[in-house]
Length: 624
Image 1 (tube, helix red, strand yellow):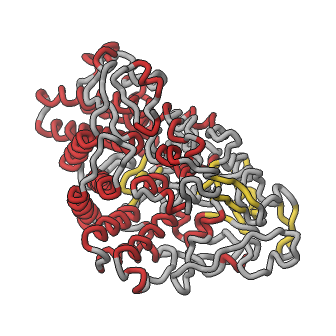
Image 2 (cartoon, helix red, strand yellow):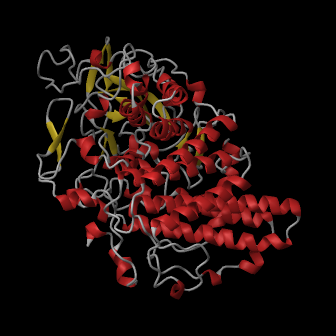
Image 3 (cartoon, rainbow, N blue to C red):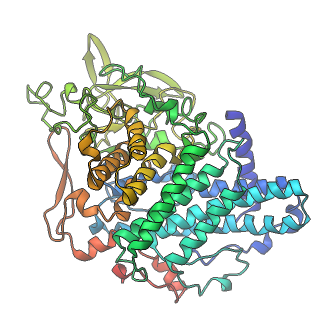
């Protein structure tokens, strides 16, 4: 896999030279493509592939840090005193600054929907890159041999998949947006573009995904290249979102009129696409979906299988096909390494920065391996209390975490759980995490340890997911494959779509149980599948614990119109507080929530800088 990645990285860098559409200026101020060496360059399949790899490299920067979006949900905290993500400013800039200056808090009173001008701009930079590939490779087709034509159409299919992904993200955040599907040679071509209605853009995205499905191979021979299952999975996901918007409505998008019948059709179409992904391509869950071993409390020499899916040495070879679409990173010396350990790890892992942490409420989502149901909620206790380490359900009592979903141990650390310390690209031994005891000395079972060093744990927990447990790379130098869409996600999306049409059915229930099995949980009990509502709750539960920190939760809450339900909030209601494992009150959200702020939580603000340049760009109504 590493040899393949090294070859891809060199192509990425070459592609960036030839496809240098600006992503540093505003949407309507793009570098003219007439200055690019088109006549000399577009001669061979290798030329086309080089340009495509440049597009992959840019588009990766729009998706590979989606975990920041989890901060807008209810189970992950993003660290930053000012509210604007900046603790990773340096490494974000290295890999493309699309996420920089976004606001990743859940409270709309902070106007987080108004802070994504940068992301909007970079999305259109990506669109220009893929349009450049599509248009120029299409010009090569008339003179190509039959075999070369097939390969060139595959390249077009990959580019159209990338374009569809970007527009899907744009409409998920902003609704109606300008649509550009060809090379822009002069700003005059786009300076007066209006926003295209979301229904029209949805059809264009469907067309891109369908073209990609028809032209891509069943399975890619090169790591990181798209294949048919990716096109089907994205098409199904688009239809699932379209169905959700039509079912629940999107009143903040004034041009959109929901249609319940359209919702039913889209749910059915989504389920059909997902079922083909599941059944037609020989894909399987990582390590056959087996849970592996929990190990022992406080020990990390053995961890559940779920953990190993997210570190490059074990999970990212993707032999079984869990990772349906992912973006590769180059590792040490490539200038294209991943930053995941830096964002998820603490100072004990190569001086990482711990930019995001689990909320204590996440603990309570991990169900009992004995009953398969929720356990009593853990309660924060002051460590000075002599009973804190032994009291029933105390957050400081290790027994409060026993016999829980194996994915919990694979995902997060609580007091006295161990993690590998890394320094100068070497393993330096296991260190115990103890909240607010950073780099201190502690004796455990007669052995002295230096505790996990981080001062950014907000609620008393830190992540294990995405943190390597072996040396050989710095905090920004991993070769992780970032999962944009996984088979487990497809299982759950199929179950959701089919439940909307048919209610709980054995096939869908079995898929959810297969996801649960990787947590060593028993199958769903009859009451969890008794009706539509019960089964929807079971599916949502699995989406929370299976996909945590993968950038799904905030988008789910918006498409379900479930922000109020998730937080238990209402307009003018009391604030909601997070508490830490010591029982202290931490962040407070939704102070005096206004009706306007709640509307703004469901749709993002069209960047004012773009509206200043283009009088035809209208604004979403909550932001007028």
